[in-house]
Amino acid sequence: MEEPKVITAERPDAPKRKKHKTFLRVVFERVYHELMRIRLAVWLLIVMTVTMIVGSVFPQGYGAETYIESWGEARYAVFSKLGLLNLFHSKFFLLLGIILLLNLLVGSIVRLSGRRSVSVSRTTAPGTARSIAMGGEPDSAISRAVRALTERGYFVSRVQGGMVSARRGPWPEGVSLLYHLAMAIAIVGFIISALHSFEGDVTLYPGEPVVVKTTSRDTGWQKFRCRIAAFDIVSWHPFEGAMPDTTVSDGKEVTLTLNEFITEWELYNDKYYPRDWISDVSIQVTGHGPEMLWPSQIIEVNRPFRAGGLTFYQMAYEQEFDVVVWQNDTEVERVKANAYVPFTLESLEGTFFPGTLRVGTLYEKYHTPVPVVPHIALTWQEPEPPADEMVAEVAVEEAPPADEAGELAEAEAESAGVELAEADTIVAPAPPPPPERIELGDLSAGEPLEVEGYTLTLENPYEGSVLTYRHDRGVTLLYIAVTAFMLGLAIRTYWPSYRVSLWIEETLTAGAIGKLMFRATGMLGEPEIVEDELVKALGGDPETPSPAPPADAAPEIAPPAEVAPDDAPTPGKHPLRDALAPEPRIESAELSPEPRIESPELPPEPDTESSQSESSPDEPEPQPGL
Image 1 (cartoon, rainbow, N blue to C red):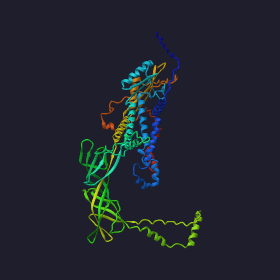
Image 2 (cartoon, helix red, strand yellow):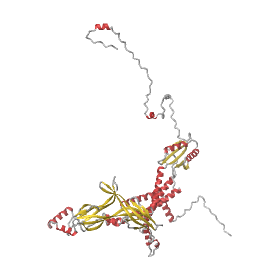
Image 3 (cartoon, helix red, strand yellow):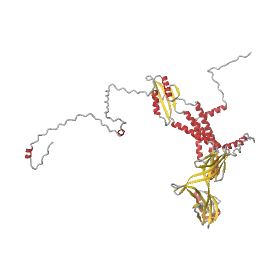
Image 4 (cartoon, helix red, strand yellow):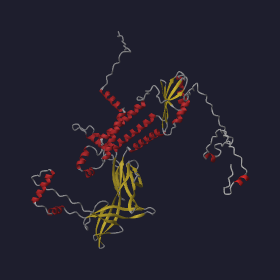
């Protein structure tokens, strides 16, 4: 007989059992939540910025001899032990880049999945919101608002609790994702460059081919594989297969042959200034698919050339020449010298210091380019005396007597607060300064140089080109990252974007009232016009009632409207008259009647004949009255 099946069900209000998390799950969740934080990205960027600043202060990637020559062995040992001379290829900097890459990827995925969406915390409109007279019921006003926004190209993202949120323009999350994607691609490019890049330099002379390998065993990835393969457990190498194959690079090479090296100069204030260095090179690539050949390829400053995964740059030049010593039209000595490298002659004592060999083409303003006569500036320094002779000269110098010397030494020691040692100490004299260099002039192929009875001439000037090359697989990713970042920056800066937040409230008298918050970005937008159009579509601004006048106030009488005369000028018909400033119009006031001035009564005029007879001849003749 079969046993009855017992079906049990938990009550809805029963407490749920907590699942026990394993240690790995706890660690994973902790790491996951930390990678989601923006704070982690900020701290990583700060540490990387400080590291880059330190790397800019301390020169990176030079040889030990260069550092020792500049700083000395003690400082070089300290800086090298601290890892300050190879920061950008160190494990610390590489680890920072990997963590920042994970932070960007996790943050972007979480943002796109919507688990980190920003919720609206405001339930009421702020005081700066713009009021809109929408009218009707709140539900009807919400429907009309959604319809009006949708018709004008807005994307309504939220309608909840009497609030409507919408936007128009570029997708903000998409622009943010573009920024994050550009940074992630750049970090991947940095990591690839740190692991696989290598560089070097090569000196080319005309007609002498030079072979350059397109792969290197000294990259960070190859060294890492060698360290992994060297790991052992009691003479057992579990990762021996990680050892890189040294025969992979066989046959993958670039052959360079210098056809011609062109040097151009400019003459300014009687001084030569370099104008350009141009290398005409023949390039042959093998081991990368079909063989490729460039018979003549120009490489100059700021114009590199890429072949076989390598990028070649014009870096410097090498100059050689022959110094021939003559005496009485007879060749005494011939020495091969290099620019900026001191040399000596058996015929003449001292050391000669050459400068830059000027050879090539001379460009001068308002003149035709002409070839330069090969010449080089030359200075001379007399020989320094041997060390034993210097010591003998110092010993021969007159010294003070023993008693006087002891008293002087004790006095100097007491003034300095130092006790004299029992044993006599010998202080080495300071070495004399080196002899001064004397300028001899220009050693030219056309004009000989006279030095102490000998004639020096310059022959066989010879120039070589110095090219640097670099193999970097991460450069392409860096170009893509910079392009994506600039595209996102242009979209965010110029493309107009509008965000709308509308709170709809109900009033007792006017129905539904909207409170609008309008935000705009983008230099090509017209926020005032767009906002006014949207407000007009939603219902317009509410009317503000004018204050009622007091009851005892006298009614205002509007002044009569002025009637324009028939011959008033119409704007737009007479451009010249419109351009002139109109004359000020004088308003005529009501003329009051002038007061009447009555003239006073004048006395009757006397008889002229009688007055003339009565008046004496000496009196002046009276003037006629008013």
